[in-house]
Image (cartoon, rainbow, N blue to C red; front, side):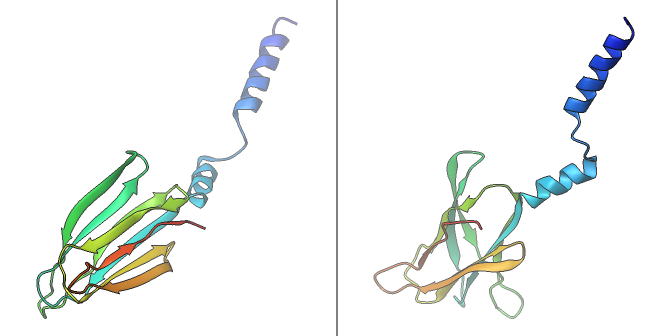
Length: 140
């Protein structure tokens, strides 16, 4: 009887601590609850261009804001700026981009969730207003 009680305790403890899933299954479940997010910023400004990109970082509980300078390829065409969030585990995305000058060239934002286009918006500035785009929404 003395040997049966510790054995039963061990069996109960093991059964309550294990849900019967392998490590691979647990990882797959966690990945199913997250999304891969890619935010693509493009410009049609033919010369030097810079965009101020701000987004809310949930882990830091603060806004992250910094200027990004567009690079240009050998043909003089601007290359996109990409922000990538792999395994994004939250259900909303909050941010904005604006050009800190009065260029009339367009500024565009595309948000891809799991490789599918979820949001696309393009704005032009004018002599009185910067090109500005908000990308704040709940992730389906």
